[in-house]
Image (tube, rainbow, N blue to C red; front, top):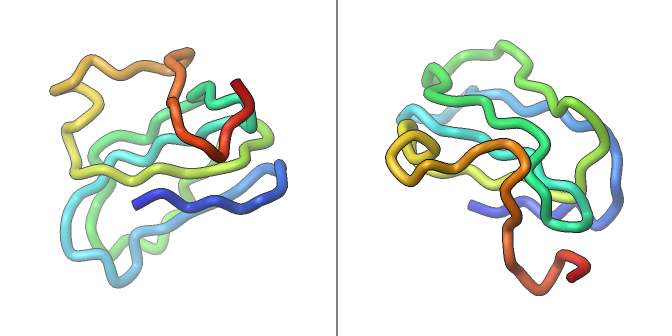
Length: 83
């Protein structure tokens, strides 16, 4: 799931009411991943925070970052991000 906040600011997420583990990708307005929180615990209310201002958050199944070799500094291509 891609969350577009339409503004750039620091954000915090949590896993409450989420039944599966997720990798959470924090993405700048340029589409750069600034940090990844991997394998988050389902139903946790622990805050998972961006390491700086972001435009969007992408949630993928837990283990996706490792499986696909996605790292901080990689670029996400989508129409909401400036090229």
